[in-house]
Length: 202
Image (spheres, helix red, strand yellow):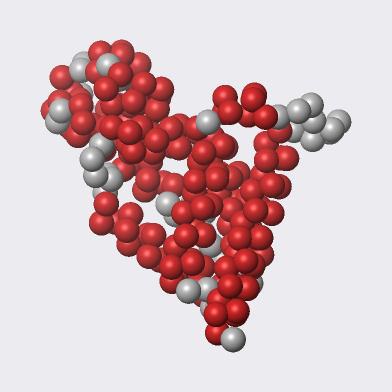
């Protein structure tokens, strides 16, 4: 019976997502990944190379799934705010992806798949300016960076919530309350950017 290479790679990637998102590049153990996948660890080196290359392959796989999952569409200021809300929903459902991004920022000198991610970022900026044509290029960039840091920060920095949050009104969970505030914040920031641009023109 022929060895199912693609299935083996898939099992290793899945196990890698769990391990790297929990322990980062330095803390991850190839032995644990292999045990979780039920695969000899030599397969990791055979298919992906050294551990850093394997981490990059794992993150790139997750990126390919995630970057297309939430698109910015619609018109006007609410389109930017709606994108923030939907990104929040996606990241809460896929917290391991956000953790991988944080480990990447802490442990790697350059982004994984930098060229393709820059292309996606430029397309996202273009979508924001299509939704709100009055936005400058730089303001659209800053707004999207703000969305990413607000949303991803909530997923990765859960302990901060224990320091600030108070008991919630009955019927509202914590994520829902935080989502609402992020959407309001992004809407206000977008409107403020437009007001500043209009003032500068006059």
